[in-house]
Amino acid sequence: GESVGLHLPTLSVQEGDNSIINCAYSNSASDYFIWYKQESGKGPQFIIDIRSNMDKRQGQRVTVLLNKTVKHLSLQIAATQPGDSAVYFCAERDDKIIFGKGTRLHILP
Amino acid sequence: DTGVSQDPRHKITKRGQNVTFRCDPISEHNRLYWYRQTLGQGPEFLTYFQNEAQLEKSRLLSDRFSAERPKGSFSTLEIQRTEQGDSAMYLCASSLANGIGELFFGEGSRLTVL
Image 1 (tube, chains in turn green, yellow):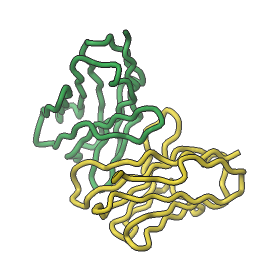
Image 2 (tube, rainbow over the protein chains, first blue to last red):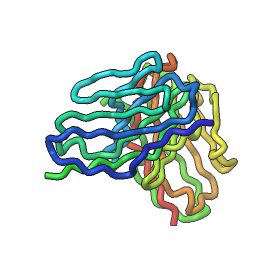
Image 3 (spheres, rainbow over the protein chains, first blue to last red):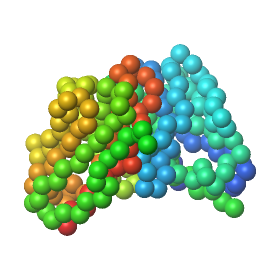
Image 4 (tube, rainbow over the protein chains, first blue to last red):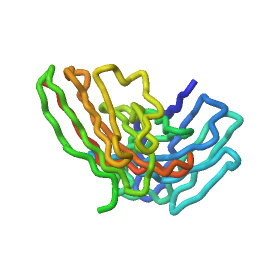
């Protein structure tokens, strides 16, 4: 069935360190995954996506890794900044997007 | 601003009243989605349209909920006989109908049912 979830509800990271947010999915047929960032009071905002024929994709300060063998993906944020404070969702898309529960990223000064 | 816009941003109503939310998608986007989000949860899919056709409805969408997109542009989501459990953020998103790429979300309409 459709299920996308994250391992931890909250993650605290020192400013300047790298953040790693993890996500597990259950639908082995899923072939397209997206990471969204949601700041308080706002709608989700696209960060980066990856198709199942890839195992890594890099953006600006962000990297998504996909391990299809264990049905796991992760979002890495380099040099975490205060503006990165938000809830991060992994999601899978076919015609619609199915979101997981989210991980709240706290940045420690 | 050419993003997705939603109106109203906040709505407080009494139980049993009807409410309607409006979404204006990005103009060239032919797909429009409605999601509901409660505190601490990820957005839950409700329904989506391609142009004016409603292609899928979630089982979450009870018969008190109805969505329309009459001319394939803006959409409305109506909730009849609201219940306290309807209190949530209602998010609208739009995209191109190519099955890939991002959904662009609006800021949401927050409903509080007293």
